[in-house]
Image 1: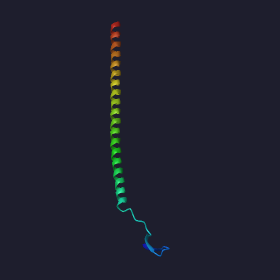
Image 2 (image 1 turned 180 degrees about the vertical axis):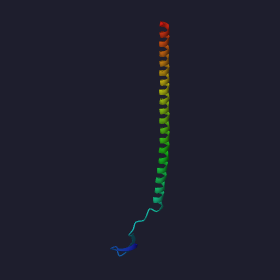
Image 3 (image 1 turned 30 degrees about the vertical axis):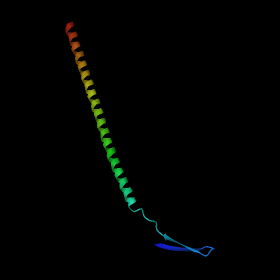
Image 4 (image 1 turned 180 degrees about the horizontal axis):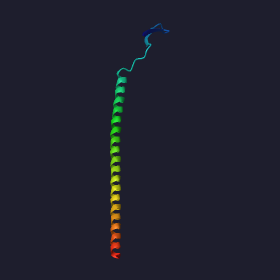
Length: 100
């Protein structure tokens, strides 16, 4: 509710001056500014979520590639070990046949 206050001032020379002030009980609302701010925050949050989820997927893919490469290296090392074992067995057979 608005209240109108009128103040009348009389100077010593006899002239008067009137000043009117309007006082309201409730402050003015922000109106559209609040909605724009809320919408902006919502868009920023959505973009942040998408960015972090994409970065997380890329990081996971990189980790999986490293794990697959490590597994391949481990399998290759097993194959080399098996080949060395076969060579050792063959060498023992040759030595055994030569001594007979």
